[in-house]
Amino acid sequence: MIDKGPSRRGFFGVAGGLAGGIAAASVARPAEAHDVAQGVVPFYGPHQAGIATPMQSSLYFGSFDLATDSRQDVIIMLQNWTVAAARMSAGLAAVPGEQDDDRPPLDSGEAVGLNPSNLTITFGFGPDMFSFAGKDRYGIAAKRPAALVDLPGFNGDQLVEGQTGGAICVQACADDAQVAFHAVRQLARMAYGTATLKWVQSGFSTGTKTKGTARNLMGFKDGTMNPTGTPLQQAVWADDAGWMQGGSYMVARRIRIALEHWDRMRVAFQEQTFGRAKASGAPLGGKHEFDAPDFNATDKDGNYVIAENAHVRLAAPVNNDGTQILRRSYSYNDGASFVAERWPPWHQGVEYDSGLFFQSYQKDPRTGFVKLFDKMSKIDALNQFTTHVGSAIFACPPGVEKGGYIGQGLFEAA
Ligand code: HEM
Image (cartoon, rainbow, N blue to C red; front, side):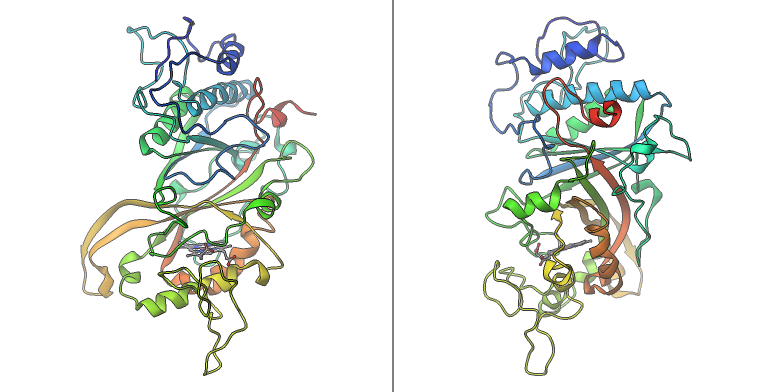
């Protein structure tokens, strides 16, 4: 995958290298990239890839702090990141040029020989980018969109600082975990001195490996009611006038699930928790996965078939003034601790650090995630098993045209 482009004098940190870098990425290159030219998701376009793109099987997510007070440093980094992201999405090494063996590698090399694996790289700007410790470091505070809110504290939040917030995020998704990791790793290397990783999260999904809807670690089909087609377009893309036009707002939550507890629940209780059948994914009272839920149906005792605190009742658009968000969540498994306590009973043996790295995209989080989760955090039956330990919000700008760079509208438009 490492290409033999024309020799260049170091790609990063050389002001003149930038234009050359952009040009290099936009010129068709010979078959230098990889053995199997397949699985390429176009990087350039009106919207960033990795939002409406069908979910790949692996995620590597990095949230960065900005370590500079220089607006120009940030712009140069974004320009170089854009070129590198376009190159890696096409299966090329992150940085063009000939390797000088007396210098560190231009590209760390672990993606050599791997195909692009539908790699998408999606960038987002967090509140800290617009002002940090009360300081408008880059002269962009006035351009912070109203929709990029500071998320309120929700019922039950147990947020860990080391898994929360950030100035810039990079979401890399691919059908190969090594390709996704490689992408964030290269961008972090390139950003040295300008941005530093604050926290990372890897994730996995059965999305592309199974037919139909992927299952989460609770064993349920997850994503059934995600919007598609026109409703997706309407739910996801920001229509603010200005630099976020055509972008989207991401809310990410690292949600730990007490799997040990969950695994001891009767299947019927698990189904009541969600309001859906475990095997088929059908709404309770329905037969098939995509049947419309009947939220008015009652059983012989007069109880709702889909309980009042069932997850899908609380989340459904019909019960939320039509609110729709796009969920693009990955399961995570970050190891386990081993305990031998007498109580509670599920606290014996293994305790996984596992759950769902929940990601939602929407045109406005105030009428999307915040509206939905404010209610869910208080009464959702799922809360018995879940704890939100990480949280972040990012404004993901619109896509890039060749020759441009990510966030150009934020830095350059009036
Ligand atoms: C560990 C945490 C979570 C798990 C395991 C989970 C799982 C599920 C499952 C199995 C469904 C039903 C199938 C489907 O339509 O996809 C669902 C639906 C949904 N969930 Fe979650 N979810 C979690 C957290 C959240 C959070 C924090 C939100 C925040 C807003 C949310 C919003 C939704 C929405 C909007 C739907 C679709 C409801 C509908 O249209 O019927 N979920 N979730």
